[in-house]
Length: 116
Image (tube, rainbow, N blue to C red; front, side):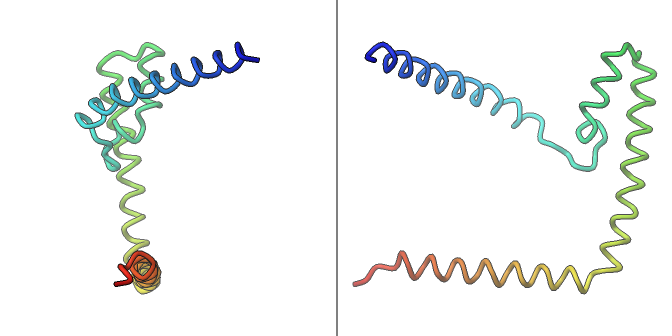
């Protein structure tokens, strides 16, 4: 039984260390290259990486990025038109969110208020 506890302790410690090292390493990478939701290289990174892995050369990759960017831009155009057409409904959703967050903050402040 004691060996099982030791093994569990070592396993948990190694998991914690591995997670910490991974988090520390990726923190620097993420800070250097933030995700850009309107840039094809970021949105379609896995697809583009798969094409590169298949052997696409630089000219083909450049064209693939352009095709993906055109595709993304097309969706962005229609998405913006949808948002414009439904602005009143979206304003209502935003107001409901603001009201719910204000109520939550009020409850939090009441709960954490100093009773003196």
